[in-house]
Image (cartoon, rainbow, N blue to C red):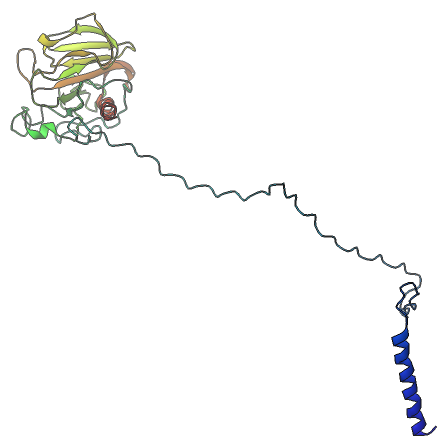
Length: 299
């Protein structure tokens, strides 16, 4: 076959193919030509099932409330700081540690507890000054000056339970001491400031310048240097906590002392040498009761 004849035949075949593509009917019912078999396939192998088409996840119920993330916990608030106790003169109350006596006045009892946590402060007014009347200004072993010196009527308080004295005091390191605490009233005025019952109980005895109160719990409280002429109680009387007893003075059995209240607490305690009915350090009970009095008065 000549070259011209080959070209003529090729053109005719191409034309026939295009015509067939144009006029072939798009009938889906007509069978499609079989797919060519894979020459490498194993005729005995079972064909694997087709992977299922993943379906879309079901939409959330629009009425269903989706869980919300929890809010982070709020930071802890700063603890509330109680107000400083302020006395009737508007001055903040301060006190020195128990057993911290005036230098060279004795060896204090530093391991003190509050032996009367429910007692009331023994003076009615919310202004008083616990310190030594012997080693303070105006005292016979003090630095000089008079008892009305401003230093005697200022904070901080100071313990003087174990001051050097000759009284038997097993709770003191020396075995002897003062047995109580000296407390000056708000001002240096005689027969002006009321002492009151620290607890409910019975007045057991009255001396020339002393009053003893036995509480309903069996604790004995002693008040020294009250003016006998101003006493509102007699031996055998029952009193309620806070009742007036008498006025603070300088009475000391015929000789004058400074204007102050000497206050004692006596109870049965283990002194280290067995159980004894003895005077115990009143300082921490006085500090606590005074703070409670001031806070109550200031709302």
